Image 1 (cartoon, rainbow, N blue to C red):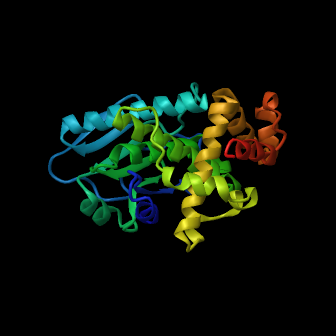
Image 2: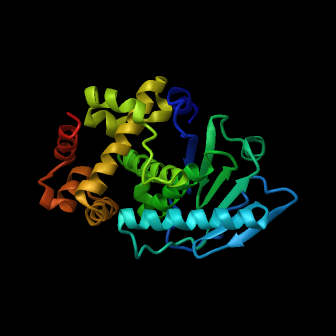
Amino acid sequence: MRRFADFLASTAFLGAACVPAPKGTDSMTAVPVVHAHFGHLGLGGAEVQSLHFDVHAYGEDHAHAVSNAAETDYTQLMMDTNLISFYQPSGLLGITDYSGPAEYHEKTRVPEWSGGVCVGDAVYVYDGPGLWPTLAHELTHVVFYEYMADLAFNPDFRWVNEGLATYEECKAAGAQEGVAFVDIFAPLRGVLRQHPLSIHDLVKLVPAQVDKDYTVSLWYAQAEALVQYMIEKGGTLGFYQFLKALKSGKTLDQAVALAFPNRGWSSLGDLDGAWRATQR
C-alpha cells in the first residue's frame, strides 16, 4: 500500500490488495482461470502455461520469465508451509502482468496505491521494480484462500494471511538481490521491539479501517515477524499443522497448542510471549 511505501521509503515494498472468491463458492469445484474481471492485455500480449499457472504478459520471453518466477515462488511457499501435497482445486492460477502502473490502474480500477491485486484464482500485477516481490505476495494470498476455503474469511485469521504473504514477499525480494531474505520492515524493528501491538490488536485490527499509517505499518511488520517465528522456530511441519487446525475449525489458541506441542506454546498468547522474549 502507498502508506507503507511512504513510511518505508528505503524498502522495495509496493502496495497489494486481495479480493477473495465470493463466500459460499464451492472451493472443491474446478472453475475456469479468472481473466475476465479486468481488461485484457493489448497488442503484443502472450500467453504461457506451466504446471500451476496461466500467464498473460507482453512478449513470450517475458511471459516465460513471469511463469518461472511464479513457479519458484509457489515451490518456496509449499516448502515454507509444508503444503507439498496441496491439491489446487481451481486448476491453473491466472497471472496477468500489465506493462506498467498506467495500464494496470486503467484496466483494474483498483486504488492508486495498489501495486498488485488477486481476485479469486488470479493475480494482476504490472512491470516495474516491485514486480517479483509483489507477485510472491499475491500468489501467497491466492493459495491461502484456496487452501483455507471458507475459513479464509474468518477475520481472526487476517494477520496469518498477510503475515505469510509478506514473509514470502521478503524472500522474493531477497532472491532479487541475491540474498535469502530482505527485511522490508527493517526501519520499524526498533519500534516494534519497544512497543509491539497487543495480541488482541494484532488479531482484531483491520488495516483498511485504520487511518494511522504508522499503526498499519506496525501491524504488517508484527504479523510478518510472528509468522516468520512460527515457521523458522516452530518448523514448517508445525506451521502446516497450525494451518490445518485452523482449516478444521479450531481457534487460534487451539491451533497453536495442537501444532507446536514440543515448543511449549499452549495458546497464541504463549507464542506471542515467546516471540517477544526474542525481541529484548
